[in-house]
Image (cartoon, rainbow, N blue to C red; front, side, top):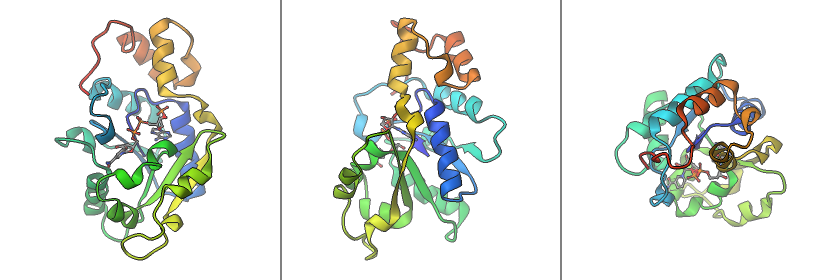
Length: 206
Ligand code: NAP
């Protein structure tokens, strides 16, 4: 499951759990991105904070895991590099599903090596309620480079809890409005103790 997770929130966890159940996944691995390729001008909170918040959020759930592979890699966080890494580690027979927000998947054709991406892994687009699914279909090629129907490998999953968003949580934390129950308790404590999103605090490492 890819994203910046700045911060991880209940919507991400509900989406991970739903995907695990719907697609009978053995495990969902959160992969915080270090430098998302499409957002080179955007600054994120330090990688160490985002990683720690994910660790806190998934604590106690044996079906959830976190990988720092993108945080350790130099340069931009291309999904294809992550999928190749996962293939190398887990072997050719493992079935991979890349889960992320539908807005990101809409732009998949502009990602690095889109043909290989669509051939290498299935994709699960987590949508907020009301998301126009037709736009997802329009954004995909008809065939992958291996000749398969691209749509056969891209799934969507409506997650009402994704009405919660990281942007809104950051704004709430910065302006003293409530967000406590939008994140796991430990993540709320972490944000409060660190002052991560307080206005005027230096933002992180992009
Ligand atoms: P982002 O800035 O964190 O999120 C964009 C939108 O999608 C936000 O509305 C976000 O909501 C939602 N979202 C993000 N991750 C989600 C998740 N796991 N489940 C549900 N909703 C999620 O992320 P991004 O930069 O668009 O990238 C998303 C993923 O796609 C990352 O893993 C990134 O590396 C990958 N990507 C790869 C390429 C490439 O390989 N060239 C290009 C673009 C993106 P919240 O803010 O509430 O999370």
